[in-house]
Length: 164
Image (tube, rainbow, N blue to C red; front, side):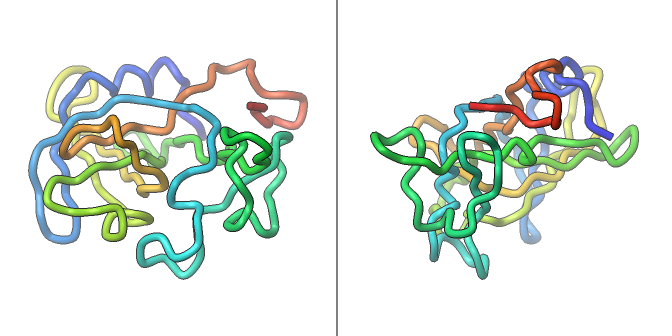
């Protein structure tokens, strides 16, 4: 089950409690969907055995996406896969992906790491979003989670794919 975009967008303005590897604190959430190859999609990023998967412009997984230039770079053909969209497990827990910047840390430590975000106000108070860091962003502040949410229902083709 995938949450409607409107419901996910409603999560954005609320500050979550962040729990990561035994630590916690507060942070900020925003959203993005730029279709570019995720920065954690390059080999040897973070502590994952393989990079985050990438897709071609038609949303088909690439076999060697880790070594393929980003589609946002001139001549590149690797993009973010539409499968990196959030989904709900139940009424209180959802899973998704995010670009991340954690204070006092670096890309090598947060790339591919997972974080549990607990929202602390508004209609989503007490709900959890568990995200994997698949991207980073130079424009993010400290303890900032830029949630990978960006297409509207109806943007998919007949196969359920979103094209960049």
